Length: 399
Ligand SMILES: *Cc1c(COP(=O)(O)O)cnc(C)c1O
Image 1: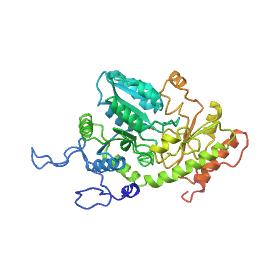
Image 2: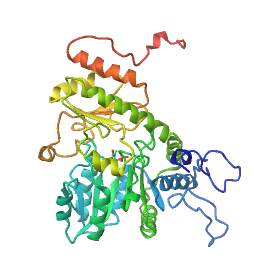
Image 3: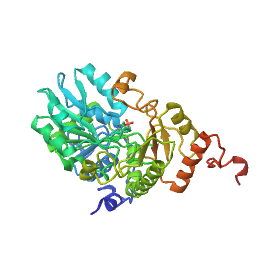
């Protein structure tokens, strides 16, 4: 069965007595037991809940893992992974990570005695030389956000295993339909399900998927022991969002490609970053391991103020953090999603402060391109036709 079929054709809840055709929300904390010593399949929702179980099975299938677990957020999932480490252990992380992950590693894991070293893991020679006997976990994002750098997952998995370390891949940016790190040799796959998996911006959630039974049992133990699971209502929303993942992504990626190509021709834009563009720097490695490009396009204008004015002039791309939703949005990562990375670190990593991130949604791409052109026209002082976004209430038939 192909993934697009699997997303809608699955058992919505085995054992449901009414044969519900969509997964019921088991909004219950407890399940009655038959006897004092005989536990049923479920007893307490922290340790297991039928709605969550269906969601977790879907994620495991999509990632080709033996098991997946759902958490209250992407960062909660990453933190759960950190519970596998002990004081003195070391994480080798790519020097281009989501700001919240950087904050978790540098300010929370560090207090537990876990040291993180940031190196350029896109360079295999650098990566190979960076291992120490304490390295227990290698952590990467590919494609990274917003710099769109690519790590060779197969090669890093082999290197990690040679050194007795695990490889964890944050696959949020491409989704399981764009890349399956477990098949490439990774040990753990993370998703901020808040992004593409949900797709509607109405849930914060995270997932971990693994291909090793022993690792799965450890994580399931920690899931229950630390109580970080996603609630049944959010699981249900996520299951609903997942059904259209393939449809949404197909449209979003196609539109993102068209927008990236359009932006290449704009004189105001100095650099366009999008994995699907011809000449994308790491195209060879990316195409060998991924089948999708995501739907985020980043541009640089060469000037912070120009970027800020451009973002503020857009109408169909409201300014908001996050990406992957059906609705387009724009952000300036330095001031927003990556603000938790200190200025001096960002400077040392040559993180451009004028970078603009466009998350492309499912709107008609002609409207999105018209909006971008209108924003540039506004920047030049021309008052071209603005895209009307919010219909005024006065004209509504309800008033
Ligand atoms: C958003 C994001 C996270 C964090 O996920 P939350 O659901 O916000 O906790 C982690 N990694 C990446 C790549 C992200 O974009």
